[in-house]
Image 1 (tube, helix red, strand yellow):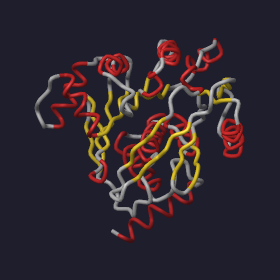
Image 2: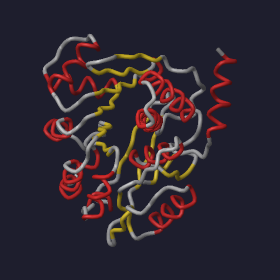
Image 3: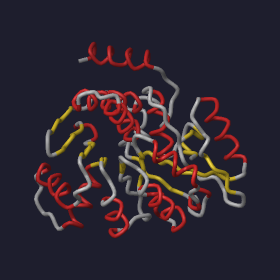
Length: 289
């Protein structure tokens, strides 16, 4: 929940990032997580309130620290994460109110990291059983994943979001040796019938939407990258927002590309911005291109 960047401590964590950007895109959303009864936790609650993020389901776990992540960016803008273990969100226990929230929600967005502990993994699967549309952002973070655990999550997903490296890991697990990307994505649809749609991010090359009915590729916008922390989360949020608003897939994908490029030009995963900033950014891209 706290990303420690070179610029200082920033609000973060993939589910929170997605929630924040969904809100910015006009989609009512809430983050379901758990913090410690410590200064970091209190600071996070205050920041959530300041930014207008629904913290109704941000639980407090006495005796466990709030999660912190050391974010390390090299000269090539490659990001690595040192994720502290045995923290508050490793011990999330679901209650009936949360189950009702998920039942009524249009989508439940989840990642693989929450499944690293037995307690939170059990809670996640309880919520997945209640959800009508399940969005899995793979987010492989070594050493907190293994084949059996990821496959179990893939079997629950309806919309899958992943990057090139994560795609190759899954291909290895499935025993798929082809380098043809479309064949690889089709293999995922065949292996996991619950998955209806795939979002594949390709970094500076662009992004790809793949389903049985349609496929779209969008090139990435050329931007001066500040850091890539949270870019993938903003991409998913913008696409999902477009989908929930009934926009055509390609339009949603283009909006996702725009927002993720914009976030890469700002420090941290959840910079303060509004729609006017995005419009200005889009206009600047037209001028520079």
